[in-house]
Length: 173
Image (cartoon, rainbow, N blue to C red; front, side, top):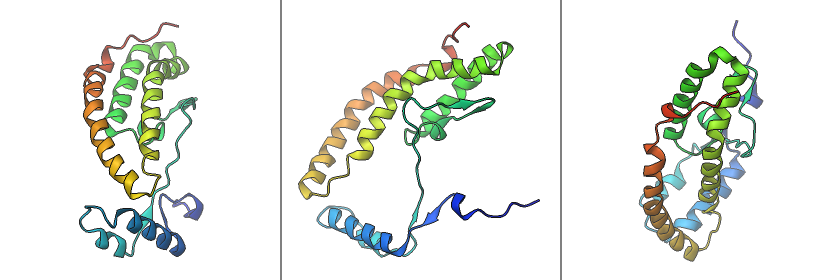
């Protein structure tokens, strides 16, 4: 039996006309003197869709009963590889701990994953908030700072992504 569409819970929503106009003006003002090619094409596009992102607090709960949030559902905006790593780690914990019960598996997964996700969450918040200033000088500074940040964080990520979550020791009860 098909469910009636719930307008409040739809996956995406089309921006109200006033919001589109305001956002287009803001984008044009931020980047008009920059080097972005095709800015006018973006500004002139009539169909703008926004996808709301809800981010759990870093200490938020990822499971309830037999339901577990993984990837962007648990910690939005971090990367696809983090989501894949979540799935691999959960499969590992499930394989090692299912005999001890679902509650044990859920808690063991969170215990193994929480520290890394907390650090990644802090980095994500910094990146998301980096573009909040609209001054031209700030945008130039951020352009170079982003380049430097990506270069330096690449070294840290190599160590992070070298770790094989399948080798993590599942906590004992």
